[in-house]
Amino acid sequence: MALLAVAATLGLAAPGCATSGRAATSTTTTTATTVTDPGPRTSTTEPDAPAEPDAVDPSLTDVPDEVFAGLGDPRIDVADYQVRLHAEPGRDEVAGTARLRLAATTADPLPSFTLDLRGPRATQVLVDGRRAKVSTEADELEITPSAPLEPGESTSVVITYAGEPEPASFPRLEVPVGWQPDDRGGWFTMNEPFGASSWVPVNDHPSDKATWTITLDTPASVTGVANGRLRSRQAVAGRRRWVWETDQPMASYLAFVAIGDYDLVERGGAEGTEVVFAFPPDLSPDERGAFDQLDPILSFFSDTFGPYPDDDAGAAVVDTSLGLAMETQTRPLFGSDAFRGGDAWALAHEVAHQWYGNAVSPARWQDLWLNESFATYADWLWRESQGEGSVRELSDGRGVPSAGGLAVLDPEAAATFDGAVYEGGARALHALRLEAGDDDFFELLRRWFADNRGRSVTTEDFLALARKVTDADVDAWADEWLRNPDPPELPR
Ligand code: ARG
Ligand code: ZN
Image (cartoon, rainbow, N blue to C red; front, side, top):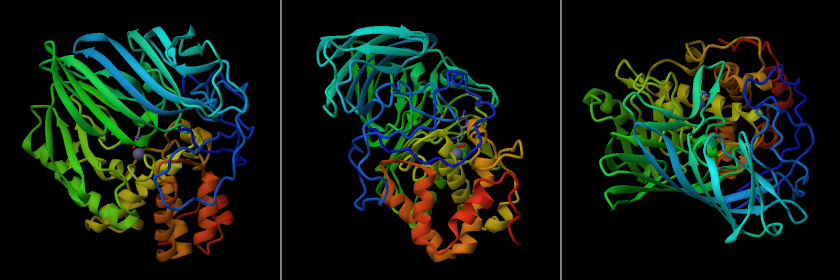
């Protein structure tokens, strides 16, 4: 579902240079863009935010985004993906069928639209059962149905595709993004921010969230893992079909797939969840035990932020050193390097993202601090509750190294996942708490989640809510802490 309206200009400097390989084809980004149909919402309270948005500009073929350009298509709103993916360990090729339910967001009938796909080629596209014309570029399909899409009408698009996934790389972080091998012949995905299109045709921008069903068709001895609930694991003609369903809206960068050798550990969890862990078979009992922390973390954040936004939870550990962890929806992703001192490193951080980032998602990549600052702050709250020091003390501590000199809201900071959007923004939140007082600050965090879960939101939306819920001078705070490359020290 496409959400949200993005008109807020934050008065930011233009990005010095966005890092993404895709950023070269920059679209004009300061124009106000809006999308119709905010889609189904799971919250009961309506946000005060955007009034009836206008339909999108029909000439925009990519989502306007100051940080990562060239992604998605704002003229469509995907509600649901049903993906069937055929994959084998040791073979760098996928074959799939993606069934999308989508609607045009334009005011007038839409003659063609694009989906992101990098590597595999589409062999056939059906729109409402009829053959559509497809032209393929390096990383995009342009689909021209036999008749234009009527605005707002649910349309079925079925893409049959096959080929070698082409992961992107994220140069400054030196991490591959998209479909990639583990160290034992299996495959997994780490999609943030633009990797999903290496294995599925997708409207690859977090402004368009959708429900997903992912069916992994693997050799019989192989396990397929994805987000959400395991609906079935059928044996079919010497192979196995693993059907995983995500029924809460999900941004495409949060979709997760792994095939290989895994133990699936299934059990009931805290907050009424069904938990599934996917562990490499030789993961030690101590390392598995590190994930027992999931339950107290789920309960702590549910008490602090509002009820956990899903019925499914767990984690996946892939057999390779990742150098990062990732908040893939319901089933955060860790590498074999995730274990430090008996802990699964970043577990609380990735679980906190299930509220901030996953349920409440950024409408533009420049709003990344809404993910990372909040998850970092949540992790400090968790650690404080565990006697590891006060939030103030933890705010001085280790973390993702910052290049320094970037404001929290600088698009360059978002483009590089700089420490400014992690610790910098978490310090900013602490400063807001000191000014607003604990009652109003935690009320703000809870309302931010309750009012916006299932949707994509902007920094402006957060500032508007903060003005409403707290007595803090929110504009002065944002200037001093979010837009300032040299923010003050927190008081002792
Ligand atoms: N979102 C991940 C986290 O919680 C970080 C991923 C950073 N790397 C990337 N290429 N997106 O910290
Ligand atoms: Zn994070």
